[in-house]
Length: 184
Image (cartoon, rainbow, N blue to C red):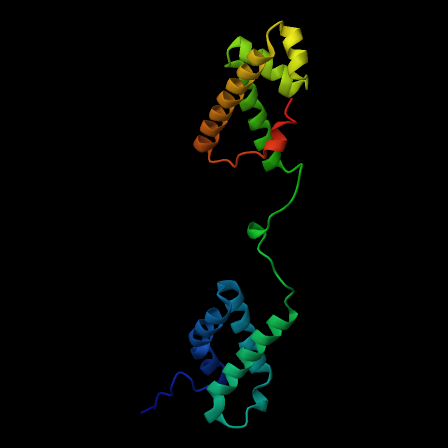
């Protein structure tokens, strides 16, 4: 009767049998399935190429895991520093995201201004958009300076409330107040 040999009777069969353990360890080190596969593949390839260097079969497992460790260290040495682009704050004035938010803010402000009563709309556009002084607005609209100031205050408060509602609904970041002065 023939005696069945264990599945690890050949060198390559023993390596193949170790593959799940090698992968599990490599994955725990790098936390990447693709990289763990690559490390295990490199380990098995190097073990097959260097099998003549193994002097004692009793040390087989330790020898293979040492090759895996060296493959991992080689990878770390070769690797260039990585940064996750999703965690980077890219300062870009003309980025599509910024352009969209800017356009949305402009449209929202224009819409909010058109919803103001005519007297408030006239005052706020002359002061904040055209840069006239209170006295000049008073002369242009033929109203007292006190009326200019009160209409302007009510108009700004109304615009602020409208923008707060907009940004709370859309979950966008409110614009910098200095940016609002440049919206025309």
